Amino acid sequence: MNGCENMINELKIEIKKALEAFFKQNYDLEINIVVEEPKKAEMGDISIPSFSVVKALRRPLPECANIIKDEVVKFDYVLDANVMGGFVNLTINKSYVSSCILKQILDEKENYAGSEKNGKNIVIDYSSPNIAKPFSIGHLRSTIIGHSLKLIYLKAGYNVIGINHLGDWGSQFGKVIVAYKKWGSEESVKEDSLSELAKLYVRFHQEAKEDPSLDDEAREVFMKLEQGNEEYLKLWQWFRAESVKEAMNLYEMLDVSFDSYNGEAFFNDKMDGVVKELEEKNLLVLDDGASIVKLDDDMPPALIKRRDGASLYITRDLAAVFYRKKTYSFDKCLYVVGNEQKLHFNQLKKVIEKMGYDYGEQIYHINFGFVLRNGKKMSTRDGGVTTLKDVLNEAIKAAYNQINIKNPSLEDKENIAKNIGVGAVIFNDLKNHRSLDYEFNIDQMLKFEGQTGPYIQYTGVRINSILRENKIDGKINYDVFLKQHYFDVVKLLDQFKDMINRAINENAPSVICKYLLSIAQEFNVFYAKEKILTDDLETRNANLLLITAVKIVLEEGLRLVGIKSLERM
Image (tube, rainbow, N blue to C red; front, side, top):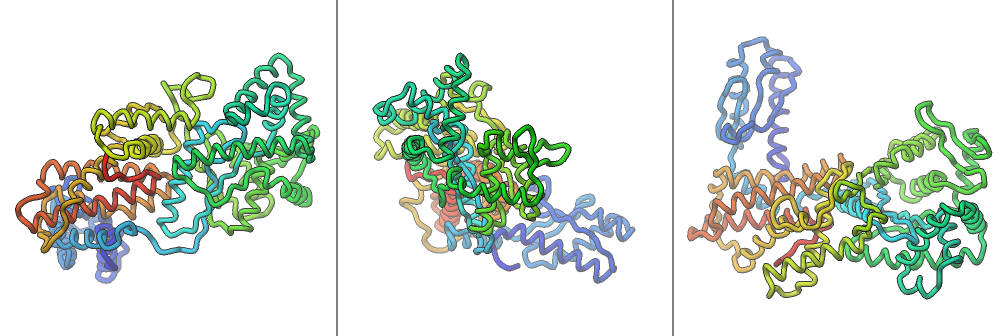
C-alpha cells in the first residue's frame, strides 16, 4: 500500500488485485474477485464472496473458500480469516489501521483527503441573478450548489473558474425602462432600488394585461437599447449598478465569491460572429422571419434571432461557450440552472455539435428542483417570504432567539446567530439531492437534532469544549480501536476522499452533507458510550486523538458546503 489515506478501501483493492493475480498465475483464469464489507460488523471487517471462484474452478464451495482464505492470511494487515457459507470474512488489524489513518489526519489537518493539482480546468456558471429583480429564493439554490461544487473541485486538485453570468440584458429591460418612465421616480429607486424596480416590473405586467400595446412599446425600447440609445443605456447602467450592489451584500452574507461577473451584456458584441459562423456553415434557416437552427426530429429548433432581430438566450450562451473555451480552455463547463432548462442545454450542446466542435459533451447542466413552502413553489406573488434577503434575515433572527433561550450569556451572539441561521438555510438545501424539490421550513432546519446544519455545528462545538482544555500528552493506547464503536468512527473518517470523488462524479454537494451527518451521528454514538476524559492516560489520549480527527474532518466538510464551524453556540 502507498499510504494511509483511504486506507481501508486501498486494502480492499490490494486484496482484490493479489487474488486475481494468484488465480491467473496458478490456474490461468481471469476471475473477477469481489471484495466488500460484511453485512454485519460482527462478521468481520472485509468479506470476499467465493462464488465466482467456484464457477471458474468448478470445485466445491468449501474448497474454493479455503483457497481464498489461505492467500489472504498472508497479508500483514489481516489478523484472521473465517469461512462462513460462501464468504471469507477477514478481521484486519484495527489498531494499526486506526493509528495510521488518525496520524495522517492530524498531520495533514485541513489538507486531509485533498489532491495534488491535476491541471484540469473547470468552469462553473452559477447564481446568475436577473438584474433589476430581487434576488429570489430560487437563486439561492444555484448560488450555494455552484459555490459548494467550486470548493469541492478545488479540494480535488482542479483549477476552477467561478462565473456569475449576470442576467443583465434581455427584453425585461425594455419593460422596466417603460415602467420607470411611466410610473417611477429617481428618489424611489435610490431609496430601495431592487424593491422599487421589482414593483415597477410587476406593475408593467398588470397594466399590460389591460393594455397589450405596452408589450410592443417595451419591445421597441429594448431594440433601441440594443442599438445603443443613449438615454436607455444610461438607465440600464444605473439599474445594473444598483442591482449588483444589492447582490454583493447577499454574497457577503453567504460568503460566496466569483472569479468573473461577465454577464449577458458582455457578450453583445460577440454574438454577430456566432450568427455569421452559423450562416457560413449553412446551419441558419429563416422561419417566418426568425432565424433558427434545425436540430434532431425529437428536439425543437434553436431560435437564434427573433423576427425583429433581437437576440435570444441561446445566441448569447453560444457566444459565452466559445469565449470560455478560448479564454479558460475548460475540460468541463458546468451550468447550475433549474430542472426546467433541460431543453435549452440540450439544444445548446446540439448546436455546438452541428457547428463541428467536439466539446459539446464537456458541457453539463447541473439541474436543481424547486424550493417549496407548504407543498407549493415559492414565488414573489404568494405573499410569503421569498426574497433571499428576507429568508436569511428570518433564519438569523430565529437562531438569535434560540441562543437567547439556551445560552443568553454567550458572547458575540449576533455573529454566531448569523453563522447558525445562514448555515441552517444552506445545509437544508444542500442535504437534498439537487435534482429534487424540497420543503422550506425555518423551524425544522434550525433544530439542534436531526438532519440539520446546527446539529453538525453543535457536534463540533461539543468537541471544541473538550479540546480547549485537554491535549494529547504522552502515549496512546491504540488497542481501544479494537472496539467496534471506536473503529466505526475511524472507518467513516477514512472515507472522506471517496466522498469528495463521489460528489464530483455526481456533481452533488448532498454527498458531502450526508457524509457529515453520518460522522456526527457515529461520533455521538461513541460519545454516549465512552467517557472521553477517562483516568487512564493512554486511553484518554486515544479518545482525544479520535475526537480531534473528527473535528478536522467535520470542519473541512462543512467548509466544502459553504458553512462556518463554530467554537461556541
